[in-house]
View 1 (cartoon, rainbow, N blue to C red):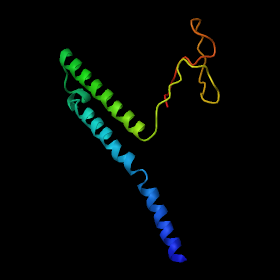
View 2: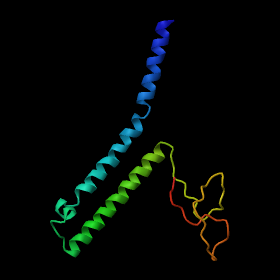
View 3: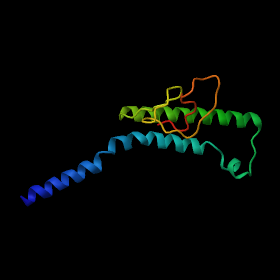
View 4: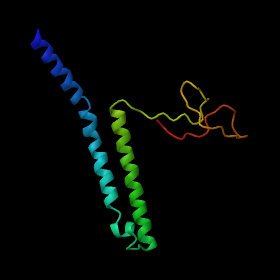
Length: 122
């Protein structure tokens, strides 16, 4: 009986340890992309030792923004793959069971009681 208890305890421990492995492996691409984005910005520019001409800075920012948006897409796909989807209630009727009100926004162009601003999409 003691062997059964020990084996069951090991199985439970292994199940808990390795349950998150698939999602962690999926997130490695996101981490790699974020690292590449950070490396795309020259260190001298960040330190203030180097200046970029306007056209080069614009290209760099455009490329960086495109990379960040692509990384966001990869992250959203990882979440969807694992059953997590974003919920954005903007424009919906406020429901205190689903939403947390932070403040009210007076807006004569919209119906009262609608979610006007979403500060955190979950």
